Structures are given as structure tokens and as C-alpha cells.
Length: 508
Image (cartoon, rainbow, N blue to C red; front, side):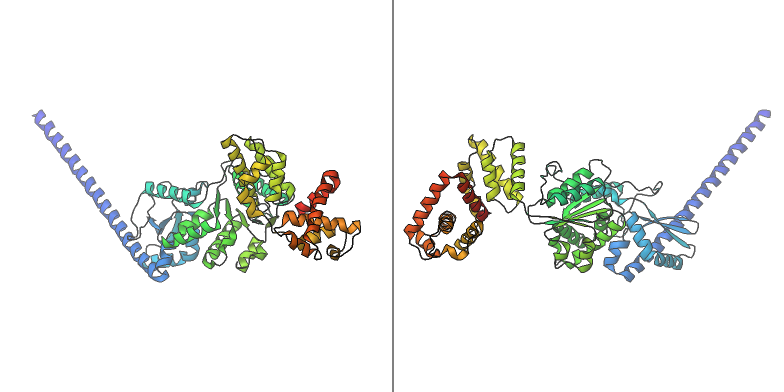
């Protein structure tokens, strides 16, 4: 009897437990239904708000600034909206914050406040430090594709996209272009000192922006790469280097792909932005405007900007006045045309680095002949060294003239007889009219003979033509003058030096 009583009690306990468990499950399911229902209402309200925003601001504006907003949780009377970066968050907060709050209050009265938070720091695409704002517990960021707003792509796809953007935005720095490999001379010493200062202390007062200008092949790009290489040694500074042409193409591509916001964020998240050959933006008004806003955003944030061009800011006609003014407000450093001494120093440094013996006479010859820019100068030397290695013969003045005859011909300057007469008259301090006069005094006749000698060697004029330019003298007189000067050069080193000096001056 007692045993039956215990069994009944046990059955009652089991039945009670089952009923309690059933009620617990029903309560949980009810809560889940309520949570799901609230979530659905919020999502529906957010969809309506997005459509209203799209109608109000337009399709392009919406895709640029608002498409990437993601709905977050509701905390009492505050709704959270997630943004991919601080820049986007701050921009939306300033431009659309009040409107978002008004629309939410209208759609869902329980929402009294809108909070914009950063979910993912997109500036990491260029190596910037991660965001200090907490993203713990936030959902994977959602990117809307072109056809469906709010389509979830997942965090892995996001990171892959960011990595591709990083590789595509900036050009790599050339490891050959360092401060150690830059040959300093009087024409470039100021620009070099400014570049060194920026590399040591970016964004120093008075040095932001740094504007380098000069002719083609004088070392502007070399200095920019050297600054970038120096800054990236620590691994804590993010640097983006690109030509102005690439800046324009990337900007146009971002407009076509409706990813302008991403392009803006990538550029404005770097610590140092370097734009080469800015003159390419002349006449491109929309690209100039985008660069102007990027310029302001970076400078205001204390980031360094380095720009190069072929002319000073004041001489870049075609740039907007506001951009030209901003470019000139920092440090402007020019690189002058190379001197003979600097060209020779560059060639000597390159020859030493190559390990191939190059006679000093050859280096001096190249420094005299190729004066346009350093790139062609280095190219000529590289060509000589390669030829010597391939044919296993030493570099000589004769082989140089043979190997580089096409390049040297292109650099030959057309010297006129009038120019020769003027230079010789200045050198010996005689009147220009004495070159064609009948005077036979040695102080006049000797310079006149030198001028005839130089005319024969530096121009393609015939002997009769040269004689006519010297007072209608006979061609035999010219022949005698040429032979006499050649003879005196062999006998008198001082006289030979004077003639050679005049020859170099006329050829340079």
C-alpha cells in the first residue's frame, strides 16, 4: 500500500515537471515571437526610410553616402545604425543626422534617438591603425549591391574587397630611389633639404604641403620615392603615392562603379599622400575639385601632402585659384637645370655603382653632350656599360661615339656662325664688326681665325659660305685659318684650352 502511494507521488512530481517545462517552452516561444515581430517592424520601417531618403537626395547621392548604412539593434528608445568608417559616420551625422532622426520618429514613435556607430574601420585598407571604437558584438557589416539594398555579403568578402582596393589605389615605391642614391648639387640642394625635413618630421609647420617643381628628369620623382621609403621604414606610417593621371582615372572609375565613397575614404585615411605631375590635372575641373577636397581633408587632419609639377603653383595656369593658393601656402622648392658639375657627379656615382670601369674622359664627354635631363644621361651610361659587357670590350671615347651616335645626334645643338662670332668676340674683347673687317692686327686676326676654325668644326657650312660670313673672304683664307689654329693648339696648351673652352660653351 505504501509502495503504491509512493508511486502516485512520483507520477505527480513527473507530471508537474512536465507542465512546468511546457510552460517554460511556451513562454520562450512567445518571447521569440515578440522579438521577431519587433525586428520585422524595425526592418520594415528602415526599408521605408531608405526609400524616402533615396527619393529626397537622389539615386547618385544615396548610393554615395547612405547606401552603406546598416540597421542595428533597438536599445529602449534609441536605434543604432552601423557605418563602415569614422569618415562616413561623421559625414552622415553632419549632413543627414537630423533628417534620419525625424524620419525614424515619424515611422516608429518609440524611436526617439538615432545613434551612428562605426562597425568596421575601412581605412585599414591602406595600413592605418585599427579603429579604437568598440565593435564587439556587432554583426558582420552589410554591403548593398547594385540591385538589392541591404544584401549581406559577409565579412570575408568585405576584407577581400578592401585588400584589392589597397593594391589598386597607390603605385609601389621604387627601392632604387633613396636619399643615399640621390646626388646632391647646387641646382637641387634646397629641394633635397626640404625632402629630408619632411621625411624626418612629416606635417611640420611650413612644410605642408611640400611642392616640388622643375623640368623633366631632374629628380622630383626620385625625391618623392625617397621620402616615402624613409617614412615607411618604421611600419607605422601609411603612404600613398600616385601620379595625377592615376588619381584622375581612379576618380572617374569610382564614379562609374558608384564607389566614390570608397575612393574618398581610402585617400583620406593615409598619413602621407604624394601626387606626381600635378600639371596633368589642368583642364580637368571635376578631378581638380575632388583633389581640392581631399587636400583640405588631409591637411586639416594633420596629414602630410607632397606634390610635384613642372612649374611653380603660380605658373600653373589652368588650375583653380583656390587650389593654386593652397598649394603655394606650404613649402615650394624648385629644382634647377643640371650643371656640368652635377651631371658629371651623377655619372661618376652611377659608374661606380655599376662596377664597370668608365674613363673620366668618357664621363666628361657625356656630361657635355647630354644636358637635357638626368634620365637620358643615365640611360646613355647604362647603354654604354651594357655594350661593354656584351662585347667584352672596354669603354672608350671612340666606342662611346659609335654606340651612342643616334642619341648624341639628337642632342646636337645647331650652332650658327653668328653665335660663334659673338662668343669669340666677347672672349677676346673685340668688336663684333671686326669679324668681317679688313683689319689685320694680330689682336683681331687671331680671334677671327679661331672663329673660322670653330665654324668649320661646329657647323655644316661649306668653306665658301663661311668665307662670305667673314667679310666675303675667299675659301682658301678659311682653309689657312683652320690649319693655323690647329697648329697653334698643338704648340700652345694655353691657347688650346681657350679654344676648347669656347667650343664647350657653344655646344652646351
